[in-house]
Image 1 (cartoon, one colour):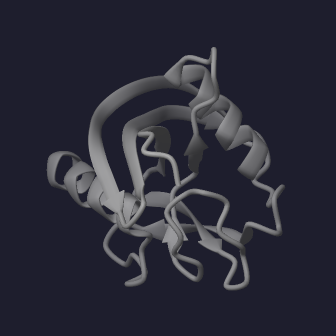
Image 2 (cartoon, one colour):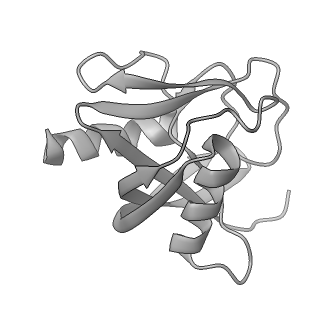
Length: 140
């Protein structure tokens, strides 16, 4: 693999005391991201060339969940490094959303589900886990 740092986007969408998570398909193939099939993750993906972080977050959420997000804020950034992969992940929070939740990429996610912040699944996708833990520390 080329030694290139890529930009990832992770978006927390909160509805009251719940956070939206998607279950990554167990049989999903590695597409150059951090590979953890069978885990639960927040919406997100890779930022595209000539796209702002906000535009990318809006696009990724729409592509995956059918939700329209707005009033976004940048929460932080983190290095997500695994063998032969390095992402700088921009962490964003969507303060508003609307639309009907749908699973628009069923080959990537088997389902999307709202989880109570006090009862999250144990098998969280590692980049999402770091974000969620820090987010909850600051926003309980």
